[in-house]
Amino acid sequence: MLQNKSDECFNCGNKLEDDENFCPDCGQKNTDLNISLAEISKEFAGDYFTFDSKFFVTLIPLLFKPGKVPKEYIDGKRVKHIPPLRIFIFLSFITFFLWGSSFNSTDVLMGDKTIDNLADSISTNQAFVDSINIAENIDLRIQNDSSVSDTAMSDGLLFLLDKKNDPMMIADSLVGDSSEFLKKVVYQGLRMYQAEKGTVKKYFMENISIVLLLVQPFFALLLKLVYIRRNNFYYIEHLVFSLYLHAFVLFASILLYILTFYFDIDFLLPWFMLLFVIYLTLALKHFFNQRWFKTIIKSMIISFTYLFTMLPIFVLFYLFISMYFY
Image (tube, rainbow, N blue to C red; front, side, top):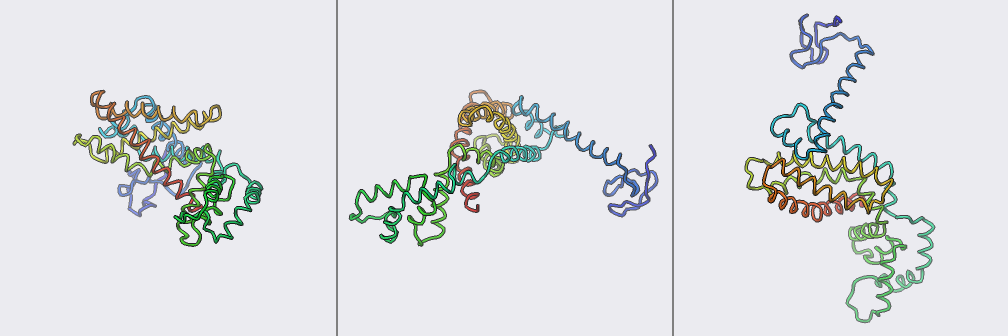
């Protein structure tokens, strides 16, 4: 089909020859201003199916051949694969949408309590609240006064640990007006303490993509430290490995979302963590090509540091920050 051409590029203004199908300066196609539905459909289909084919070419080995995709990417075989950051962000959007659509963020703040239940709890503990007011808000504060009776301290502790009580009331009793920031910190901690355990986990899963994005540079640094003797691997290559690894984690979290319709999340999470450890071990073996003994030892070190130290810190930090500004 004959292509309608122009003597000037409408994108950059460069003069074009009749035999030039694309602008030599900016690369835009040489065509006139008339736009057809067929052209729009062709451009859309071309972009979509190009991404679609790359997606599956990348995803299948990413799932079933751990370490192959990042290894090929750093070896220069990049045309057939989606870049690591792009596939990470793409899967992040899907994960955020799925978990977010099934969860109301206000649930994490109050658990299953309603305003009526809160009002009942305040009425139930009104006598204790009155005693706080009479004592000028010092009954719950940490103090060394030996005159404070064991009974009063016991009642204060029970009031503090009772999840039916208003967290703001407890925070105000503990901190008073001495520091608004400290009161906010105590208040957010109480909200997390009072929230239902399963609800907090679902809230974390809803925001797992954000947490994993924040942890990327630190996980890459952890890899660099563990493989510090591998001088041929620079930090950016560890970051590539980390992004593809966590792309797998995001895809697994999508499967986890589907399985939560049939199984309890408390049952699934340990298996999810075990899958991560196995996948990481296989990926490290293929990517760094060390002996199995060294790979397994390093995988255990990375897994323990990541799952029980680094990730919990980032989770708590994100939960606190997100709830602080809520």
